[in-house]
Picture 1: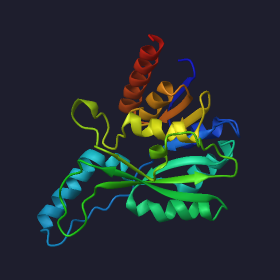
Picture 2: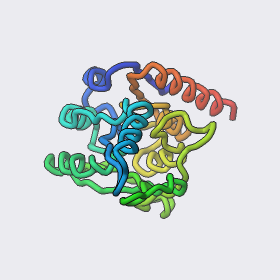
Picture 3: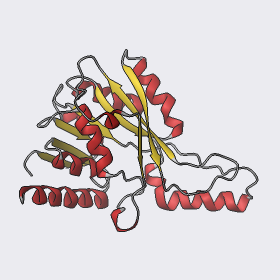
Length: 237
């Protein structure tokens, strides 16, 4: 596809094959580190059931990743450090401190989910998700973007029903907002944990080039289909 390169494989191996200083912006959603314990007063049976659900439905994206290897590659392939990383609560401090220790500015952004599951037995409702924004000197920031797009909080419902293809899927308009704020038309966007391809769809719709990497066969095929459809739809107008 014009302006799109998709790789099925391990993200570290693929990134090692990419030239240094070749990417304008990274927007990605790495495997999370998730709490597997329940809130106050749950029975052992209920806790065990929660662990089984975790293993069956999102276990493949809840084992974390090698921070040092992945983040080091991020810095090598970026023209200027310009990175947005979705992460779980348990990953925020690790992610922010890694880049701060490498002399970079870091900002914490938030996605507020308006239709999060209303369960909060002994703990807060999981109605927010964090995005760590890493910015090096000279990184793109489009000041002419609408003021509301510069907010540190993005508010939207979680993808659901027939629009939901992946357990941690983000909305296309959410990713497009970041692309339009932190990159320009014709720039190259990387998502090395591509999932169902939302960043690729947003890149096509925003007239950006896109590099996507996904190791899972099912989600790679789905991402390829979604991005192809976005490309074909765009060329109709």
